[in-house]
Amino acid sequence: MPPLKKIKPSTLILFVIIIVAALLRFNALAFQSLWLDELHTAIEANPVLPWHSLFNYLKCCDQHPPVFFILERFSFLLFGHNEWAARFVPALTGIACVWAIYRLGKELFNEQLGLIAALFTCINYFNIFYAQEARDYELLWLMTTLSYLYFIRLVKNLRTSDAIWYVILTALLLYTHYFGLLVLFCQGVLAIIYWLLNKETKKKFLITFLIAWLAVAILYIPWLPFFKEIANIKSFWIERPKPNFFITFFSEYFGNAKILKPFLYAFIIFFLLRAFLSRKTFANPQSNPFAFSFIFIVIAILFPYAILYLKSITSVPVLISRYTMEVLPPIIIALSFGVIFIPGKMLRYGVFGIFICLTLYNLIVTKRYYSTISKEQFREMTNYVVTEKNNVPLINELTAWQQQYYLDKFHYTGKVFTGKKEDIIDSILHKSSPQYTIDTFWLVGAHNDPKLTPNKQQALDTAYNLISQKDYYGAWAQLYARKK
Image (tube, rainbow, N blue to C red; front, side):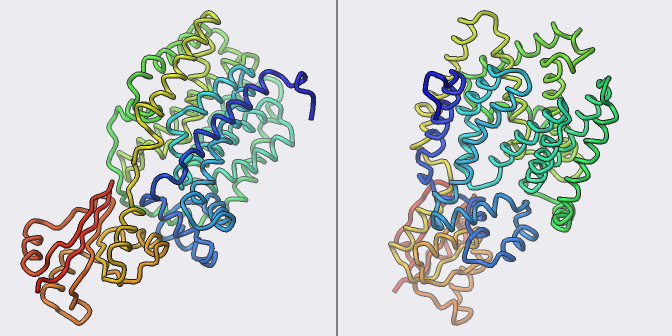
């Protein structure tokens, strides 16, 4: 290890930023229950299941590429089939995002931009939140950043080593999330622009990228049957977006914190103002890092938004904030440029320092992020059921499959009824078959599953007493016993 005095200050700063990122992402990692989508991950990546079960789930029911779920399976093998292990992979990925965007910022402009982008990512609410979510969105952020990093390196240098890394990382991106295809599309548009602006190595540039994309396509061929399944989806649960969706998303990316908006808008203004003042340099962006970066930022942000919006208003809605993780790296880079271009060193770092403090204050104090429940409490609701009455039947209309993870975890021994709960209640009231001749049963719900309608509740109350009940965040449980 080199002596401390020989370590560059920028290296020490990056090290501190990464340590802070780790603390923010691993703190209270298992504090909250797994919610509906995370339970999909836990069940599908269960290491006791055969591998083909995982791929069947990813083809029929939870249409996602496999890389994240494979990593989750290994995490469960190492740390146990629990909440902490489920969120270990995204938490580690969130830390890697900080390092990756530092590399991207440094490659695009300079080390200062990289460090500011790393600090932005370190404290970013969206990155922290999805670093504690057992889904593949954080990995999409990371692989997008790394794919763009080696794309930029390849554009600049056309080196074989960069081409190999670009192919590997872009293939991994496509095997991480289907919206990685949007990143590949943006890279195609950027490559055309940079090729047109390239005056010296046009032929080598064209051949290099054609070979790289062919290699990516070959690597993706095994997944095409799975991709076909998602391409055939004709309806989805997402609502059609409003034209001003970007404003809503941008606020969500930073925790819907009103106090941060003036700073964020100021950073954007300084970024755009510099672009306007530097417009003459766009005639030769290959020799101007900011012009080169500006083209990258505009394409990498606008094209995914435009494609997803058009898809959502013309066919199947697919536009929600967490599906746009691929635009966060270029947005962070744009904001980082805005910070750099604030005139005056004292003013620049003073403003950015205040922004950092307010961001952390909003996260820890205002939102009480590490002590406030914000995810459906499947764990607490199921534990209550098992503790109060473990061996009586349970009715769960909407989320029985997902709840099974916690039913198994807490060793529930009763029978689970699925299907429309009001029909099951009718069957119990009329004792329509021996299996419905029940003296005591649980009625539970989660993920916006409503309780019984007043009429059905009145009918149930004529024959059964409500023995105990408890409401949780996004979940509830009621225990009924037949009147004597």
